[in-house]
Image (tube, rainbow, N blue to C red; front, side):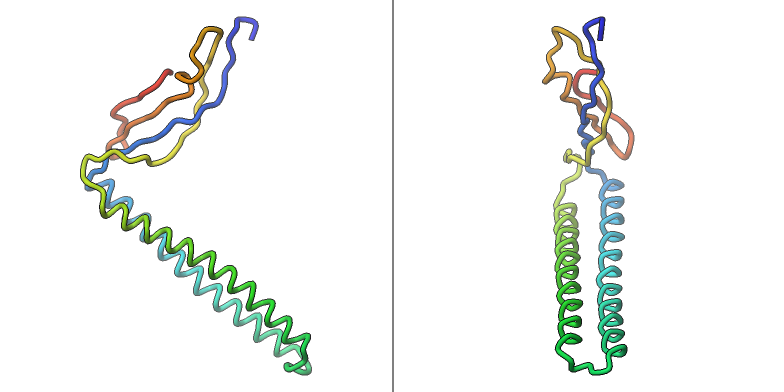
Length: 147
């Protein structure tokens, strides 16, 4: 810092050109995410039912209000987690729909990376922080922004 410069972190936007390969990769990733979501939902239902069965089996009187409260609590927790997983699944389905509607050669934001940049007195901070990489099928085509 004695020389009037510092190194800071910045985000770099990764943009991708939509190609047949990109669409295939995106569809495969979303399909896997959807299958995982379905698996998590099925596992949640199984585990929730097993827990309810276990509570009832261990109690002397399954109709005891305390037992019923425990069962209701488990069912409520399962319902809350199910709603969360179903929302995730809905978002994945929406992403699938969006990917299907993309046109070839369209540029889409794919994510963020982090890097560091050295800035000094007199630099335009806004320009230094703005950076983007354009990729086509994983190969960098362009780098925008101050390096």
